Length: 469
Image (tube, rainbow, N blue to C red):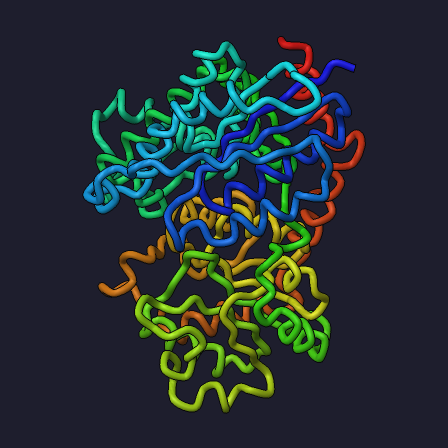
């Protein structure tokens, strides 16, 4: 049997590596002749946290998947980071092109020489299309966010041709083809208002059109309007909805206090706990933490609250951040922790609601487990995810759709009364959002079964890749 190889280049960070690996494993399960190489670009500590442990978890999967970690290069000047994180990351990844090309050429498999049939590139890695072209390998984009946000990225060139500038908060509501509702400018991602970040993403969107296909970590039943909009665009290559690809086992090596957390959940009544978690990079300032604590206390609900410590705070010293006596007064119905095993908490029968930063992986995980979300976006494309989930899809309860981590000290504090009202709303067993989320839970699982929409899309993609079309 002639073997074929797919090479993946995910963006740095677990949030991109995990769905890439899950996608790759699904392809391996569908095609025995396929093998996979995943090229790792690592950031400087602490932004590389968990990468090595996650890669090591694949050591027992045999000889059909391997990882090549590239040597670190000199990053772009720090001033580029302060101007725009997105542009800094794009410049950094571009500087890895020679190393990625060398790794593809010189790292041979021990027992065979498979034909490379595709280079699957992450959404931030569009510069790697140059490597694919130089080596004569068909390039594909793996978009780890949703179809709606992809539609916005592709729209940037249209906006620029009409206005010749980045966005402004004073711009009127936007009629974006990928969204069913008009999109207010205050839910656009922060990079859209930043000259460098805007230009970086506009370039990414333009380059996506040079590929042989765009693969999206979503499913057609979740985002029908956005998917139909993309599929009907004659300027785009074929679009494949191949998700959801999730890490349902949870990250290895991040066990911290998992046993204690899961034991606490076991002691709670079914559908009684509100879970609050803001992702691996999401932090709230002390004043906001205190308002949130007051809301939880006043609401009377049971809660599990994962807090990422603000810069300069000592890990685990929650009593120094929260209102005096809060931990004592709520100890019989609440638990505060640092890291939490998110997928295991969402899967637990006691969990009834999820206050989330609306990262795409977290959004898909909440839907997979049928746990409705309260939207509290912080950075990246999370504001647009929140808007889509609340307005377009009616699958989440709105706290804020325009909150930004970098602006939470200048009048952007969400007050306890507002938070408390939303907590009561999400925990209401009669809230119609609950029923819709439960229905989407079933659909998210059906799409990956044989004859499901994502399964069919994966099959079609695989045939296209292996046939070399």
